[in-house]
Length: 237
Image (cartoon, rainbow, N blue to C red; front, side, top):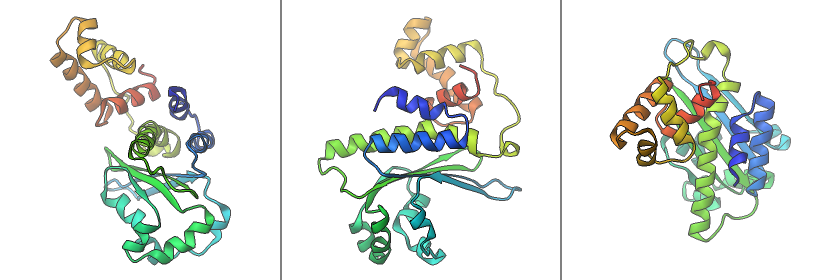
């Protein structure tokens, strides 16, 4: 995928454009269906959950009981697994839910990739793509596909918080980054390693990582890529 495809998802300004860009990204990767959900569970506040995507209307109209959802092996894995995973008929059969797959397959849910990203403040971002034809049998092609989708989820999660979460649930204070923290993030955004950033800014690799950790803490994220995306979304870069 092109870098611009990821940036387009990150730059979406509302739920409609966010959904459209996710669908476009999924289609470019040969997936007919994409679903994204944001869930927030914070003490003292009612749980929040919303979902976007191009789920077929016929599938939405079909009966989906709570019991069947709880039996669904994909949903069960999303609750416990931190790494992306794939599914097909065999997963459902192995877990005694082959009947669920039989009911979903006619709507385009024959195989796919799903993942859950867990963020600070009780926020969870779920992403799944589905299609009729099998996933690549070549391990290298499959790993590249999953890696591309995982990177999409990293870009999409901050957009989801920004455009899907009600304003009252957003953090009230703007993070304050030091000039050095911004410089380190900016050069990291350009694809530079911590060592290379240190050479550019005349500091040690350890100091670069120190500034990165501080920026990540202030932005409330757990990785440098997420820190860059959040800083961009907040207008700090």
